[in-house]
Length: 243
Image 1 (cartoon, rainbow, N blue to C red):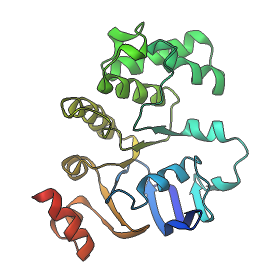
Image 2: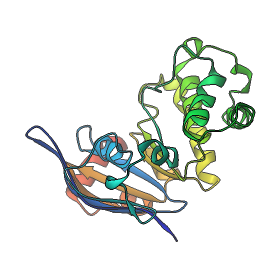
Image 3: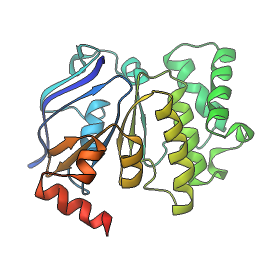
């Protein structure tokens, strides 16, 4: 299977705090990779490095055979490697539809008609077609996150990164967002997901990466990680969820 992302020995510090201490792993086409681990283990920083929201201090991030740390056009790169944030990051002064059109027009230079057609298609896909004229400030958290996913999909990304997409949601809204993500996984979209939803990681991913203290402690299939973890740190982390 084609290797889309290759992360080689990535290090990242903030002042004197080393957050990533030499992280390496691969993502292949159609993979759904879940990054799990305690808060502060480096998962979100790693995701932000892949999206160039943070620049690693050393190491390589190869996407489609290019070292993206040398990329000149970050916006075009981010269209290809989209990101869905914990706090949605929608434009509050725009309607749902406009939120899904603006980046297509500005970054991909799509004509308004084409951008609208694409936006309507993906808003329907995430169950938000009846809210196209709503201002995003009137939406629930789950609805905002579904709009944010539609917006990312409108850019035709090769890879979608999710940074704890359900952690800012009320419990009853988590399911609606996870259902959208399950559907995307079943359609073969390549995804890297930082999540605390262990049952989702177990059910939907084909690869689980457990991080602790800035390193990858263990990685493998969901069956390996959840049913037969090798590392004591992995066992102890999962025991908290299994309780």
